[in-house]
Structure formats: structure tokens, C-alpha cells
Image (cartoon, rainbow, N blue to C red; front, side, top):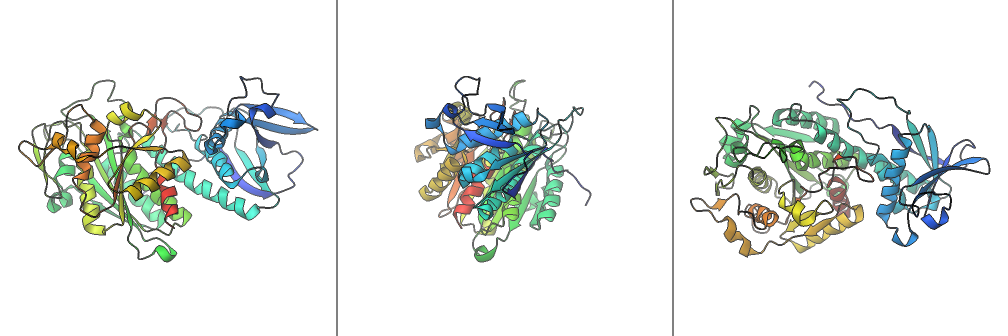
Amino acid sequence: MAATYTTPKLPLTLNTADLPAPVDEPVIRLLSAPEVPTFTGPHGQIGEVNLVIEAGKSVVFVSLGKADKIIPDTYRQAGGKLADWLLKHPVSQLGVVADELGEVELAAFCEGLLLNTFRFERYKAPEKSVGSCTINVRSVSKRPEFDKVVAHTNSLVAAVNLQRDWAHEPASEINPQTLSERAQELAATLGVKCTVLDEPQLIEMGAGAITAVGKGSKTPARMILLEYPGKGKGMGQQPVALVGKAITFDTGGYSLKDVTNIQTMKYDKCGGLNVLAIFKAAVDLGLETPLVGVICAAENMISGKAYRPDDILTSLSGKTIEIVTTDAEGRLILADGLTYAQKNFTPRAVIDMATLTGGVVTALGRVRAGLFSNDDTLAGQLFQAGEATHERLWRMPLDEDYLAQIKGDDADLRNSGGKEATPVIGGMFLKQFIEEGTRWAHLDIAGVADVPKDLPYSQKGATGFGVRLVIKYLEGLE
């Protein structure tokens, strides 16, 4: 198969090394603001960088802000800000003494460095570069532990940054067909099974929801299936199923988006890309837990073949769906994906990820994603993984009372319940396709999958939100 993508290469490399360091290697020191009197900024804000000479040696001070406000994510933010500084200053090598940090703090700092070194500049004219930089994580007493931290961080962030790289690609480059080709190539590289179901196969099996969404596009819908058998004691166990929404571009269909809201709709594929990135991280990290992935890919376009309001669709589950708006398409493709995962893999848990509703942005802003679940234990595990990775969640209700809003007039269900409680209605719709006894969680990442401005460790655009969180959850199962 011809290569369909290139892996983003960062201008920063993380290594581990022993002490003592070479005399000419500048050293990074992370200190809270009161300990850094040389900082000229207001109260030593997180990530302020100051290069000083101490006893003839270059020291790069990075502020952690006020001492009483420091949390693990502070180190991630400081790493991100240092990455910004390194991209503007010609430093070829730095060292950090890991013994001054705990493993959690070191991991967060390294994540911030690598996450914020990512730039999507494939289609820009090359700019003058300050060159590459190597950061040596040095230790006296805990070298094996810090070797593991750095290796883990390199693998994890490489997966996140692959997701971000593909998320930034426009619909002229990634559509359901080319996404399936990329997935097959990635799966071959990872050594995992990948099966692509095309439109005729989906129609034959009765997946009328996902195929309807894709009818308006020149590139019809695909369902991309991934299987990772796990390792060690995990092999042979029931898998965790990951289901992702990959709308490669969303016009809204005949319920057309306006000129403002149609922009950035290339990011409507982020839930599906999360599944691919999680598989990459799981393989590279050697996770024990078996996984199955179901990526529901479609392009929501307008044409003479496109589906319309008032259409009635028959989903893979057999439930019929009355279309109120063609701009509530994500839940339709996920309905068939969730059904397929349960029917074919008997998973121990199902987690779906989707940029599903604008309403979750209104409710939670760009700080937390919405968490919906029918299982308190699963919801708690995901919530705690979110707190640990700072990819934070907030649990939302799924009271049966909400079901009345999506009861169909001429079909079993309607795909929209109006303007009230829209993220809850999205979750409630998906819940109708979860079988009795299946542990399920839905993550509505619409507010956090991409951001409109630079953050401490994420540039404007795709964030990869959810990859680190789900990997943390999966590691907790082992």
C-alpha cells in the first residue's frame, strides 16, 4: 500500500542520561515564584523563563507560579511554556535533574514540552528555524524509573500529536475513503487487525443510519474496525470497545450551518481520530487490556442524494429514526457503530467519543467535556482518569424524563429534541442503542477537541483531548 501520511517530527527530543552532566550543558530548574527573584514578570507567572549565569553555568529558570497553587498540571503548563521559549531561542541541548521532581511531576513537565512543540505547518512556506533541541533527563538515584517515565511520555504524546496532525488536515485531504486508507496503513504499522466496511456492505447489513448521513457525499460512509488482542494476562479477556465519530466535514446537510459555524468543521472527526491514537498508544505502551475500535466515518454534505428532514431511517439495531435536522448527524452514525460493537464483540465496556453538540460548549465551556454513563463505576473511573491527566470531565444527567423529547411521531425516535438540554438529549439518544447490561459511557468533546486560541500546552486548533484520559483509564484496569 502506498504511504498516505507522514508522522509529524518534533524539533525537540527527550532522552535520559546519567549525572554528572557536561559542564557546558545548561540546566533547567523549576521553581515557584518566591524562589525566583530574577523574574521580571508579574509575580512569576507559570512558565515564565529566565536564562541566568550562576557560578559560570547557564541555568534556565522556569517559574511554577505561586507555591500554594502548584498542582501536577502546573508542571505540564510550565513545560509547554518552555517549549514556546525553546522554539524561539537557539539552544541545542539542555538538562533537567529529575531527582528534584517526583515521577508524576516529571511526566507532566515532559508531556507539556512535547505537546506544545507540535505545530501544523505542512501547507505553510518554511520559516527559518532555530534548530532542534535535546533535553536530557538526568538522575543520580532513580534512572530506571525515569527511563520508564520518559519512554512512556514519548509514546503517549506521539499518539496524541498524530491525532492532532490528522485532525488539522482539511476535508480535501481526509474523507471517509482516505481516512480508511490511513487507518489501514497505521494498523499495518502497529500490527493490529483493521477491517473497513464500505457502503454496499453497510447497506447489506442494515446500517441505514450511517449510510444515510454519507449519501450526500462523493465519498460514501465507511465503518473502520480495529482489533488489539492485548498482552500478557489481558489476552483472551473481553475487550473494551472504543467507538468514535469521524465526520470528516460537516456542512449540516440541508439543515445548513451558517458561515461562522461551518468553519472548523474539519475537527468533527476528532472522536474517531482519538480511537486511532489510543490504539497507537496502546500498542506502543504494550497495554494488557484488549481493545476493539469502531470508527464511524462519513461526510455530511448536500446533493440530490443527501438525506432530508422528515426522512425515516432504519438503524442497524432495527430502531427507526425520524429526521428532524440533518445537522444532528453524529448521533446517527454512532447509533450504528454502538450497535455493531455490542453485537460483534461482547465488550466489557463501551466508550464513545464525539464532538456531538454545541450545547455542551454552552454548558461546560472549553474546560471540561461532558460525561454520560449508565454505570457509576465506569463513570467514576473515567472521571478520575480525567482529573489525573487534566483532561477533565463533568458528569451529566440521563434521567428517563428526557426521553419524551425524542419520542418519534412517525418512527421510534426523533434525532433532535429541540433547543432544550441539547447535550443531554444527544446522550439520551445514544443510550437507546445500548443493550441491557452493557456498561457504557459517552464523552461529548465538542468544547475541548479544538480550541480557538493558544493554551499553555496546546496551540490553536486540535488538542487531542481524550487520548491521554482513556489511556490512563485503561492502565488503571491492569
